[in-house]
Length: 307
Ligand SMILES: Cc1cc2nc3c(=O)[nH]c(=O)nc-3n(C[C@H](O)[C@H](O)[C@H](O)COP(=O)(O)OP(=O)(O)OC[C@H]3O[C@@H](n4cnc5c(N)ncnc54)[C@H](O)[C@@H]3O)c2cc1C
Image (cartoon, rainbow, N blue to C red; front, side):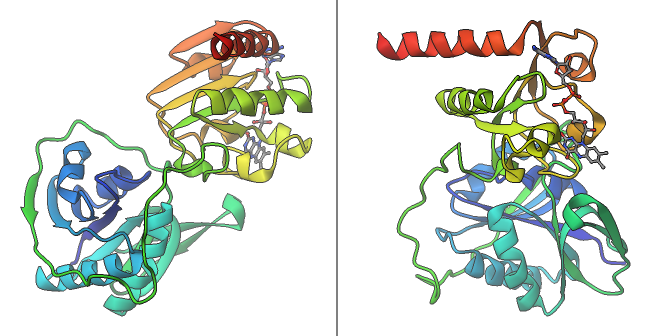
């Protein structure tokens, strides 16, 4: 029976959010494709067997076609799991088209014979039992990774990439703006919940987040109150995130919130209740009024920028 292989697109050696999870879902087997692909393998501790396709191209359409060529060259009939990062979501349909197989997008779980996909904003899970080969995109943050695996076997495949795509000409790749970027991709998030007293606090929270190069996220209580838009809501009915750092201001840590949080390396929580779940999860738990802490941080930052 065929197995799974991950196809992970990289730009300038940077692995996208959800890349390591896609590789873990494929039991450590991966094709890493894009600019700086060889360098990117250094960060993939969950990989076991990696094929590197280092091409100086940043066009998902070409990545998709090249990945299909490489799979054919390797004689692989495996189904493919792609991280549902912005580049992964662009690449996957081109890869599925080139392979002539079905695309299953937004999966929470992928195996060669069963794919579960989130639908209706995460309120429903649909289960597919594919009878043949397929391409699936896996939502970042839904799975987590175990990074304790052994060194990977790395091989390189040379492909001749077209000089440019007929559809896309890439002039430059700019870093995203932290205040508007897709929250699912944000490496640092400052979260606000009902412990912050009013709508103005979320303007202040967004300014603080920007000052420390982080994105703002909120709980559902806050989006229900209309104090922040839905695309800032973290959780099962919001966005599934996977930051390395999460700072929570006045958030209780309800399961519908924390199940969308991924596996941050560091969690800092500010809350008046030392025993709530968010404080229990935190590496640094600060028992204090979150509004006062935010005022103090804003004052420190403005002092810093004035000097
Ligand atoms: C079907 C369903 C789906 C849901 N989906 C989501 C979802 O996607 N995302 C989500 O976030 N929620 C979701 N929820 C809601 C979730 O159950 C919680 O109600 C919500 O996450 C709680 O948000 P909160 O932590 O801001 O508020 P609360 O639970 O009210 O917590 C407020 C926290 O602030 C602390 N606090 C109070 N005053 C202060 C102060 N001055 N300083 C510091 N701390 C203070 C309190 O001790 C408390 O811990 C969903 C619920 C359901 C039923």
